[in-house]
Image (cartoon, rainbow, N blue to C red):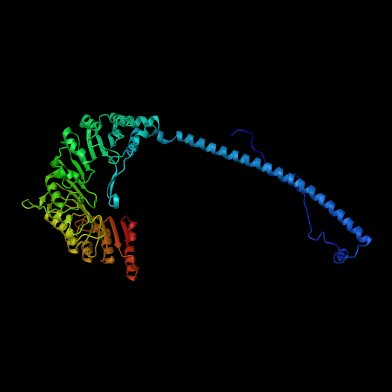
Length: 589
């Protein structure tokens, strides 16, 4: 800061003009008339000569006091004006000091920024940070609310185009790593692929991104925005990309109308490096009228996701036998069937002879009269290790039970089932009974994970699974009804000090939620035994690591004495939280 230092300090003596203000003492009765004069105020008598002289002297004295007051007032007014000027000057100096202080802070911040470790981050770290900005594939989600039913897409700009303009170093890093540019989202609109300047600019940008990806394998997602596109075939620029870079396409996600899918066989695309494929017809129901669409040759395809297709095996010609991971999804439509039904799913699984992971998310709503007469059942999937199933709730139709009755999975390790995704009530016990029979039918159990959500469960079925599947490590029964878990079930899970054999000795994670009727004390005893006594068991028993209990109750039910007792009993588990046991105890309406 420039300028002379401020050397002002408060005065300490009262001789200083700043402090030598006139002192005034005005007694309250100083102007009161003397008793001999006061009597004149209550009569009309004239004053005597002596009294008249006294009164005139009094008037002269008061006039002199007024002139003195006027003088003092003028001096004080001048003093106030001077003080206001000094205060204003002082405030200006305070403002100047504050501004200078902020300028110094800003200078410090700027200087520290030059020393920021980010400036010295290795390129590898920057690469990982930049990688987090990449979005692939184009985000989308489904909705079942009113006019919004179906899928919504949320296209985003590639942040790399912004990052490269930040500084030379970031530009150098962003441009020098081809992998960053290998994730490409293409939005098909009339503007993006038109013949005008905007369309030319968009295709040039795609070309620049492809050029920056060098020889790295590509991940492409292509979405036709039906609200802004009138294309019925792939734009020529996209077809050129698939031809020119065919050997480098590793992942391909297509969110296109059926007309575009139907036009693709004529191109005879060959994608020899593709391992991951998503086929998503955006006009629900239309694709089901097509048979055997041979979209491209893909000899290395391993992962396949298909959305809103009733019979994938019918609609597409693909190398089903080489698929290792398969996913089928469907949204909920009031007036349109979507997604495979159990019978078409079973035929599909039969063709997926090498599949290891299979997800049927939300089985379709339609039930056909077709049957499996003459076909060998159950269908054996000898390599399938992971299976997840879910369905839309519907009256008098239980697709999950139908499907599980027709398969045999000797290598199954993980089974996750979610019922009635759009309903508030639970599926009938038939579905969980079918799961029990599936595990029993599949031979010596290898299953380690069993999740079941929103369904009625017979206690005997669950108890049977616990007794016959000792390999289970992660059990989650959520949103189930009373009777699913009984006191007898908990006693089967409880360890004893004498080392007697118990059910599921490898159990690590247990989640239970719903209308629970078992004894809370027996539940607490079971958890305590699996935490305290696990190390003394022969053969060894794995220590329980995670427990989640969520009890349902009705909103109109108030906490009675029994409920208070249950809460008190469960609180005994709090002590084990400090010892490392992950315990979550909640209640919901």
